[in-house]
Amino acid sequence: MGDTVDQPSRCPRIDRDDELGCDPYRIMDLLSDDDARAVFLYVEEPATVSDISEALDLPQSTAYRKVEELHEAGLLSQLNERSRTGTPGHYVRAMDHVSVTYDEPLRIECTCNGRLLYCEP
Image (cartoon, helix red, strand yellow):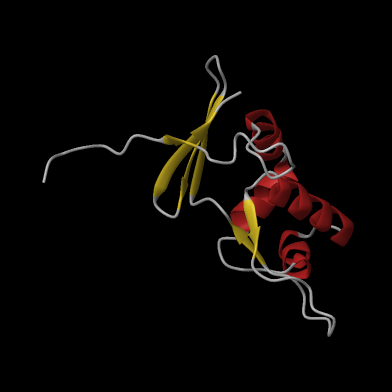
């Protein structure tokens, strides 16, 4: 086997027009926000918004807002929908690793299920 390094692929979400597209500026803003970053780091294992709120000592409304923003930016995955019987939705990180390069252009690189991806404006 050779010593090849995997080269990142362009994120397939970059061309989406909806909220689940890859927007490097939005991701950078979220990861710069202390509460959003704490939520992202906390959900290494599946957690409900109530779990997140309690563990991070955040008001539940803040926890819901940060989870929604992270989900829309593609940084969190929702594992299940809230059921009619009251079973809460669970969230987990969608990315194994995220890094931001502040060069021009701004570049976000992430590892998702072992696959290297990037997006830039």
